[in-house]
Length: 196
View (cartoon, helix red, strand yellow):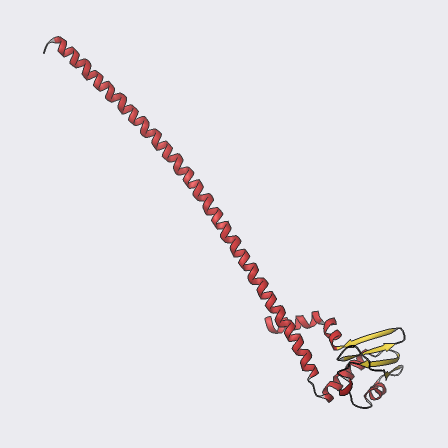
């Protein structure tokens, strides 16, 4: 090998070494860029995953809240149906009392609702046949002084109970009206009895 060959060999070797170094640096830089890109992708993936999890959790919570509202509405509706059925059953029990028990019930209502003066009582169409003869005069005799009742024409537009009419005023004591007027109190009693 001549001196020139040696010099050319050294130049080739330096070139190879330089190319290797440049390639090594380029590979290192490419690896760094790839690693940084991977970090950014991983961070974005984590952010996307976190957002997706939060959204999924919100959807699940919303669905659970909706289901809970539906459940509560259904329960409330069922309770209201039970209360209405119980009120209706209570009315029916009242109507099914024997004639004498029902007359006693009406007597207490009449005495409680009688006002001062002379009142005219009109019984419900279903009650007229159940009332014993002389019923009104017997009750009128039990009223305190200053209160009296006489029987009216009995052309009522309701089935059960009575209306007490006084000059310029009337007291509707039909059974439907009694239940309607006391619905909140009766509902509370039923709720306390059945649901607490």
